[in-house]
Image (cartoon, rainbow, N blue to C red; front, top):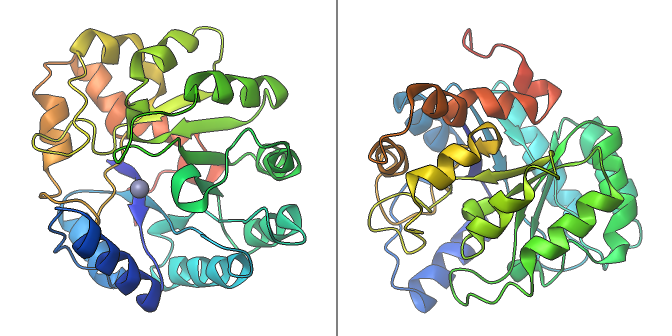
Length: 275
Ligand SMILES: [Zn+2]
């Protein structure tokens, strides 16, 4: 199993995020937040590799955050691989991203709602060109789901980004809920578009999408496994159990749980089973 959507943040930021959920949401979050404890829980669950991220919600913090993410990956012996963050309010986001790739980041995370930035903002173009040139990928949380469902034509905006950057790989988080079917419909003409499973399949998840097995089969080659661990209000195994409950073909399940993720970045392509 490769989990492409895990959150690790520096302690003060993580405490602030947990406070936000406690005050503003009904979610009960009690999974560990310390990187070594998160990694230990993932190993115990049978995860062979994971990709983790944080995000800069304001200018002036991306460089330090990226340095922390890369150092944390080294502390974990490369078991977890980091996605960088940039903020378009900073003087040189593309330069920040280049530095982050040099330091070991394997792609970019963009959270449109938390960062109040849209992936199709033209100021992202030089940043996305760096991701494509380094053969990484972008993991993007499109719109304000689950708090509101209007994504301002998320699928159309993501398709426009991929038309401008045909070599770029984009993973839309949360299976693109609430626009899942529209994303899957784009896949035949937009080959570098992926969806992750994060929170969309776990029973009792606030983002459970009611997604049918035939929609998953139709997109089987471009779905990657993600969970939002440790920021989800249920046990780690729930996402996988939700997928298994769909009764997918075994080749589809294998592709989703690990094989597809190997195509997202060179660092994920090597065999990590020895780690
Ligand atoms: Zn997330």
